[in-house]
Image (cartoon, rainbow over all chains, first blue to last red; front, top):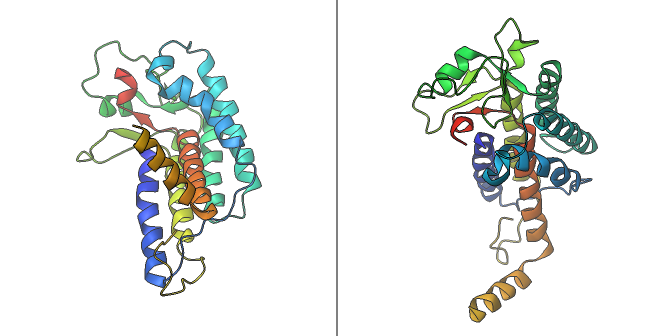
Length: 199
Length: 47
């Protein structure tokens, strides 16, 4: 969920841009929108919802993540000409490649895990196994294919939440922010007296 | 409660197509970011 900050940053930025230019915030319609909930719903069940993520066996996690991300990549391909989508798609593709090459989950090194959760109970994670109920698998750098695409960037110590991000995650966040920023720059000019909304 | 429901219905009725489209696209973008990203989080341990 850490990547939602990209939307929290991009949305007000787009609104401000629209407001400063006297325009409406305009997001162009997307193709095949149904692909997104179809792809993400299984992920929500397996990785996010407390009522289900502890019940669903770990063995289903890789297949869920890979199939879901392939569907999302198809959606992004249909919408590749929209602002920000090509960079979001590049991030998604990078994530998918490293996930596919490492058994279906995003690799994270033991060193990164130790810094990510320094107070985690002993035996709460093991090399070669899924990290808790998330999308990651703990692998040493030697075991990791394309380690530079793995979750290896930690947020600064002062951040309100602890998270390890991949290069693909940064590109996804950038693409989402870019899309919302662009939405503030291509709308119709407001008729000055009659419009109050920037949407 | 009935008054609240009526007020919600009225407000929904006031939403024009542009607003509905914007809200749906924002929801789509949120789901897309959740699904596309794969960050490791400290919360993955505690669940």
